[in-house]
Length: 593
Image (cartoon, rainbow, N blue to C red; front, side, top):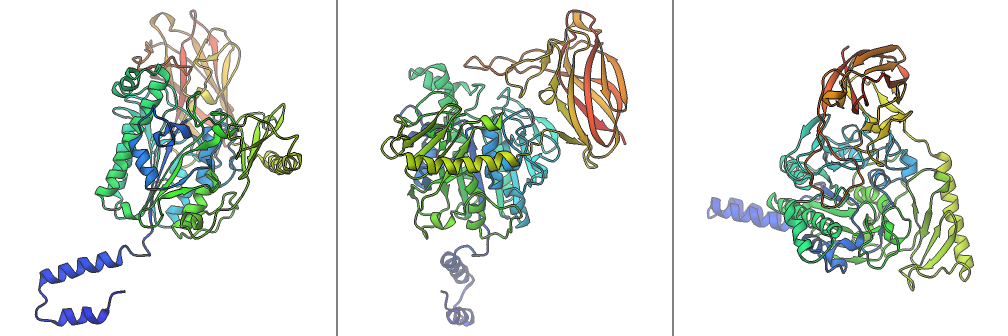
């Protein structure tokens, strides 16, 4: 405590010079430190498809992650931290503190990744507490108006809203509601945008959510990172994955350096984790399972939380999961929030601060796919993991059998039945109450335009996606008259719209007649102008399963009225002129009144 009597005596002394006062002020600042009332900044860094074993500090001698190694040593590392088997569910749980089925999310595409607009996110709570909020990178919780990050609490969004990106160099991203082309490699670009945000808001408490899209496929990375691992003898897939991880590691280093440079590191909570297990079979600490699995390897990821002077660097065996992040950050920041919808997660701030002993609990996992009643699921506590599959009910002793080699359900039957009962109860509760958000909401008063990508349409006839993965795909095989694609929408305000179509069509294929149909009528139009849709230069180091990325052009379709309420919009091939009508990517609707 500072003696105020000494301060008064110094100020009244004739020998107290200006330099003396400056020195004394610095001493006072050093003693008192930051104000207890100052809210901590929060930086959340999320990797995409990175497993627990993709960190050098976790025993992987093939990959170099010096920054993450150092971050782990400076953080409280949760050695048993769990997420969902797939991306969108994890992100919804982290943002809301609630199980993903409660939020409307159940899978990763075709609208099943959409989180309900009325869900209260961490960003919204922080904004109510005076924070500036920014999101950079992959969103994956909905692309339409209500699900957009700007309407879910983020002041700024730079990134892509869908599940994966088709091209990682000079890519097109949303900057809030506008589409802009980036420069360079995606991870580098997102880092630069996040650093600008932190620089601009250094005087305010802020949330900076940096959501990298690596090491998710397609496997693209700057050459120098790939070559390093290829020269070390690794195959192309591992060389690219570890190159992507090392590039991300470098970028995380730039973020941490900027916090130091801005002199705000001491008042910033930094979190790093991944959204699911590894996307290929590679080193993962001998754990069973990978991305998509409810076994240990599919859902256990690295998790580091750093707050200099507030969180003691160490390791904890406390069971934790993504639904704990929101309530825990609210607790650490001592923020005001009275949730209308109860958290499923637990505030672990006292555990993190060393004020509470670790405790046992149940961690539930579910696959993110359809049909909901037929999904694999699991539950684990400190000792056991019970796995419920379509064919079996298995129990593993995770203490003595961490690789899940031996099923002991017939030996530890009582334990298995107790865990099975808890898992079945939660599964029934979540599935019975699940309400998807697959209908597209559009036509809001403040919404100048909206785009309907073909990935969200129902296809008929012989029309096909360009890939088995609808995200980032286009439609092709427009070869049969009468075939169409259909979007189902709910229009909030009646309006008249200018419609444009994103397409490609070779010189010899122009002239086909199509129609755009809504509840108020239809518009006929021809693809009369050719556009050679070229595949972008091949930057893949591994043959992709995703659709290739191409160049596209836009053409005017006409004007159409959309009525309030349910609207079905279809695009139909009326008369094919040549062999194929063309390639079609999306429709854009711009309000005229």
